[in-house]
Length: 223
Length: 315
Image (cartoon, rainbow over all chains, first blue to last red; front, side, top):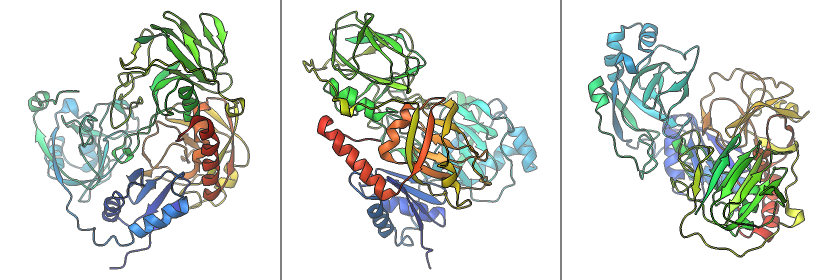
């Protein structure tokens, strides 16, 4: 299979490489992670950015090193990502936009939870806030769109969905994605070896839980 | 073993080196917005360039020392007064228990760093201690300082007899008019070939939306194109994005790690410390350079600074 030649853009201390799909972005991430000269490796949806210390590596050298390192991404494309199960409470108290989202999808509010919990999704990337996950559904889905008026405050764990793309909020923050449920899991815990619960490439399955289960979900002790 | 915040001013927070290696988790850089002033202040009290100091914004702030020690102040503050007496910036200052340290308003510029010889206690996470305000992590309980906060020093703090003064020619010149050098960003020429020429044509002013996250710029509108379908991609402090409004947005140290607006330009690393001195009303003339030249400028700047500061990094 012919791999299209990646397009590299060079800034003075980071470079960005466009890649044709998420599989290759994740494959590139895995390969590039082995080189300690890359101080940051940040996957995007169809690109990856690599930052370096320009006192040690020149931009031109960085670009040629990185393109050599990812010259053959086909071997890595079939790697096995981990699957994470995310408990979600779809109770109306935690899902202010379930009616709006269900209407856009052409289903009833009651079936929204089973519709969502039946989906297999994949983490496309993390961004916006520490541990904030952008997810992509494996199946097609009608467009829901963002809220006309973004909220000033969205609770951590909230599941936002705009269609095929959805997200999980990790910290209290403003946000414009319609909210259809909330997970009791902590998306980002800096005290852990792996601070982010999710990682780009992970497969995610949702499991509906009751409001009671949500309220009594065992919380790990804060450090 | 502490220093008390008597007046925190507009925004004061504990800041040192940025978080590195965690942007793929969505973790912003945080850290001192003007890393050069931080490094100069830290050196005057015998500390390494990235250690935690107090970053003070625009209005100034007032502190009380609760033990004797040494401090240094570097940045935009128009004055430093100890118990009402004017004291020099860029110099190690001895302070006694109960001394009041008055950091004046920024004029011109935006931020000032108060470094203490005693080691400041700050929350540790992900290999850093700076305050990440957006996620309420690190620093002083993850938040900006408030009046009456007591910032503890760690018990093992060294006592220093150092007495240093920054050489005149290494003192940053503060101004409300800045020249910032840029290289093209990944989306500089995808839809509008002249966008960087237009960006560099005349100065931009920093608008009212100005924070550690980013600065909205006002000036000649750039022809923006429909970016609604641009897939989100990595951004960094110093990235200039072009939203549909056509008014560029310059990202600061607390910027999020990915974005969906075209990345038209990137401030070169050698100039990025100046972002910390930009406030509402500052004027910026952008000048385009090449990545090769940017690397030379960065290495020359480090070499000049290391003659005084020893090992140093800018971010």
